[in-house]
Amino acid sequence: MGKKSLAAALAAAAGMVASATASADSAWASRSELGYALSRGNSDSENGNFKFDIAHLLGKWIYAFGLDGLYGNSNGVGTAQRWDAHLQTDLKLSDKAFWFGALRYEDDAYSGFAYQASFSTGAGLIFLQTDTNKLSAQLGAGVRRLRPEELVRDDGGAVIQRIPGDSSDDAVVNGALTFEHSFNPSTKLLEALSIESGQSNTSTRNNLGLQVKMGNALSLAVAWSYLRNSSPPAGIISKTDQLTTVNLVYEIKNPKVTPTAVALTQRLQTAN
Image (cartoon, rainbow, N blue to C red; front, side, top):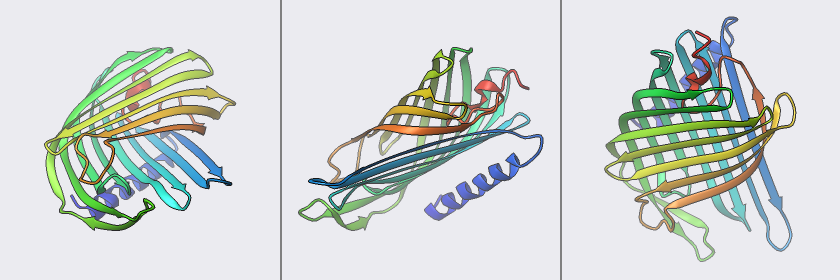
């Protein structure tokens, strides 16, 4: 599974989702987040992040595509440059169970990897589905491709050269958990945890956010993200990355569909 082929597959899948949403009998939803900070003076810095998710329901199938991006610069030195594309297809098996297939591609300029890509498939289960609480989990297995790279920096910390290593493949198991709690109609807590483990390393992602509605479609979200790689390439100082953001959120909602990254069948069980 090469870098170009996976990127092409994700692009084709995104096109399929967009085309399907144009159908008159389709059900879909989307969620977009955007945040930006700019500082000028004794220290010049700028940071930005965005997230976009779209989900489409077609019978017992759900197609979900997402794209995340992060950029950071301090005094002319790049500190963050990451984008992540992911696609998941779910097939409803029962009121509580679903089968999924997922693709993910990540390009993080400061992680020590030129790219990380994976494909997995498995099963998921919805444990809670109420107006107040929603809890679901999934477990699967698949294959992952990694390409490490050595980062050469100057005395100021800027990356001046990238020395790519050899790509490697390994089998992985992964699990994911999503939880949502509504304190009231305008305020909710969102939690998403995913773990992918193979012979070379274990990758952990956690996103915790508090979202407050400002209108029918607009909200304000405060979020904390945690990423950890158990065995980063040589030369990478830290195994973990943490990010705190305050973003504007714009949602196009549908009572049948929610654009969450893992268990998109959460609100479909009573609809079909």
